[in-house]
Image (cartoon, rainbow, N blue to C red; front, side, top):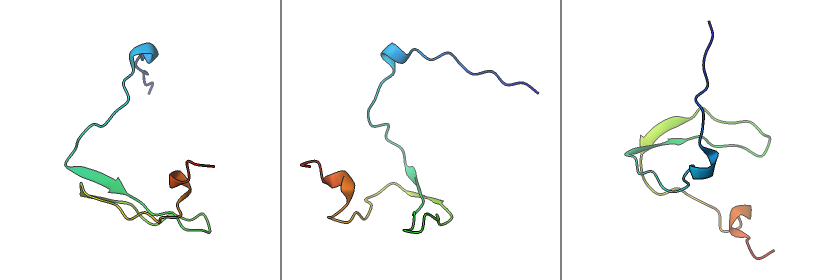
Length: 58
């Protein structure tokens, strides 16, 4: 079969929060392996204070 890809209006593609009741969680380990992901009720996530995403002052 063939599939079609919709045309995207890249100039007007929004970026922002799209609230949902659930989120998909999957953990990645230092060796590069991932655990099996799962849907969970929307909520806070654990994040290490030394996470690279928080180091915006470099």
